[in-house]
Image 1 (cartoon, rainbow, N blue to C red):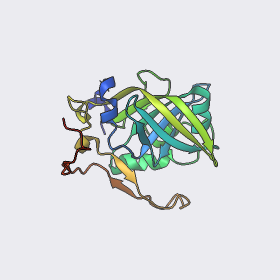
Image 2 (image 1 turned 135 degrees about the vertical axis):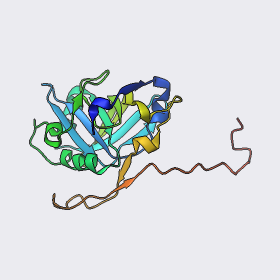
Image 3 (image 1 turned 120 degrees about the horizontal axis):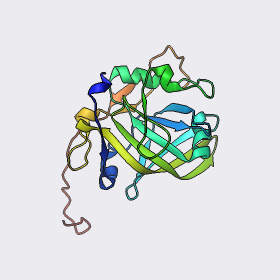
Image 4 (image 1 turned 30 degrees about the vertical axis):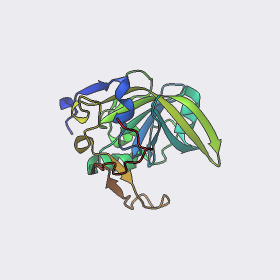
Length: 212
């Protein structure tokens, strides 16, 4: 991918909710620690959980750098990779358990670019980005549930239309669908495309349906 040919555009506030599409997908989340060191981690599930304000949620194990960084700085960036082998190979590298303080972006050959509002960087090779400040967290079992309020969103200019909707055939988001988490590093992980669409009309015409 020739990053020099890609221009990022800001997505306006009123479009943040509709642009996070699909509402759950594979992501790479970037954080920084109190010393400003970058961390990146791959997450199989990241979900938009509220419309207004636009909020995004994920869970993370308590022994992960993302856990410590989110609690310490209250910021993170959700970067959405495409269903392309080259970037998904890097998603797997970012998911390796490196020692604390190691910059996973460097290990994976990914490029950090400044975020618009928060301190953690965006990942240039990803096509959409959602900068978040922590709204609330809850510890349960051995995990931390994190809900972040989106404070800025941006994308490759060809991945968002004039009405703020994701151009899915350009964005090409992905879902993770196996294999078991404890497989050896040499084993393959299974991803599936998440951008095939079907528009389905409302055929029920009862009084409960809002008439617009």
